[in-house]
Image 1 (cartoon, rainbow, N blue to C red):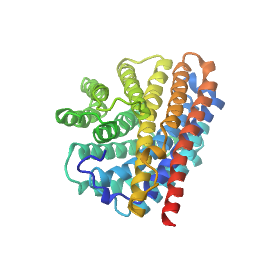
Image 2 (image 1 turned 45 degrees about the vertical axis):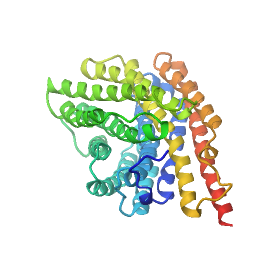
Image 3 (image 1 turned 90 degrees about the vertical axis):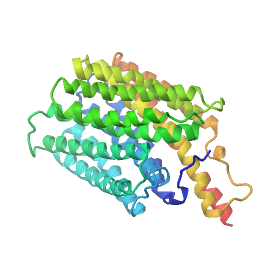
Image 4 (image 1 turned 30 degrees about the vertical axis):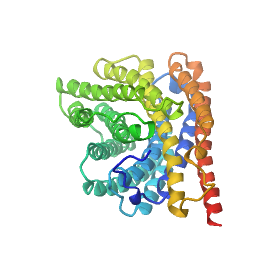
Length: 419
C-alpha cells in the first residue's frame, strides 16, 4: 500500500492535520443549515446569502480539509516538512476557524466590521501557512507533484490577494475600476487554480497508491500543471482573444484530468467495492459536467439557474466528494501509522479497516448522493432549497461522526497499548 518515495519519517505530529480535518465538517453542516433557513440562495447567484454559503464551503470545509491534507503531504509526499509545523498549524487553524464565520456573516449582512475582522483573520492564517509552505517547497526535490503543489500554493496566494481586495472594496477602503473582473479572477484562481491544481497534484500520488490504479502517465502530469500555469494568467491578465484561450486551456486541463482519472480507476487491480472510489468517480463525473457550463458562462453568459448549477457541481459534486473520499483514506492511515510510530506493532491493535468500516462510509456516500441531487435541482425547483440544505447538513454530520469515531478509536488503542 505504501508507495515508494514516501518520507514517512518526516511526517508531522498527528495533531497538525487532525485539527483541520476534524473541524472541517462543522462548516459544511453550517452551510447546510444556512441553505435550509435562507432558501433564497436558490433563486440567484448574486444574493448575499449565496456568497456567504460559498465561503462557508470553500474556506471552511474545503479550506480546512485541504490545509490539513497539505500539511501532511508536503513532508511525506514532497519531502518538504513545514518549519515549526505546530505553530503554523495553530495560527492557520485559528485564522480560518474564527475568520470564516465572521466573513460569511459580514457578506450576508453587509457589515463592514465583520468583513474587516473576518478577512483580517483569514488573511493572517493563510499568509502564515503560505509562508511556511513556500519555504518548504523551495527546498523540496523537483517532481511533477512538487511543481503542482508550488502552483497550488501560488494560486492560493493570488486568490487571497484578490479576495482581500474585494473585501476592502466592500468595506469602502477603495474602488476598483472593474470589480466584476476582480470577482471573476477570484473565482477562477480559487476554484480552477487552488482547488483544481491541488486535487490534481494530490491525485497523482493518492489515486495509484490508495485505489491501486496504474500511475498517471508522465506526459499527462507534465502537461496538466503546465497547462494550468499558462492558462490561468492568460484568462485573467490579458485581453481577448487570449482571455478566451486561457479559459479554454484551463477547462481542457481539468477535463483531461477527470477523464484520465476515470480511465485509470477502470483499470484498478482490485475490483472490490470501495466507497472512496465511488466518491472520486462522482467527483470526476461532476467536474466533467461543471467545466463546460462554467466555460460557457464565462464566454457567453448563462441564465442564473445554470450558473448556480455549475457552482454546485464543482463545489459539492466535485470538490466536496473528492475531499470526503480522500479523508476516508487519509485519516485511518494516519491513525494507523501514528499508533505504530508511538507504540510499535502489537497484537490486537486496530487495522486500517477497523478505523473506518466500509458500511459507515457507504451510508454517508448514499446520503451525500441524495443531498447532491436535491441541491442540483434546487435552482430550477426553488422549493427544494429547504430539504437540500437539511440533507447537506445531515451528510456533514455523518462525515464528522465517522471521522470522530476514527480519532476516538485511535485514542483508545493508544491508551491500551501504553498500559
